[in-house]
Image (cartoon, rainbow, N blue to C red; front, side):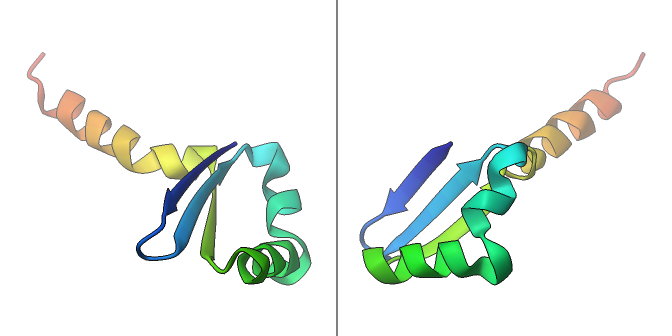
Length: 68
């Protein structure tokens, strides 16, 4: 699990393993909401594959453009 904090914007981006994602978010987002209220931050929780998805898509596009 990784956490990226932006103190100026009071935000935190949490990357959780797929098997721990539902635990991090909680039922109807209760865990994330409570953590955000306690910390005073807006917390965005993503799964590891989702967080890596944008860079993987770019790599796929580049490899598709290479002539074979």
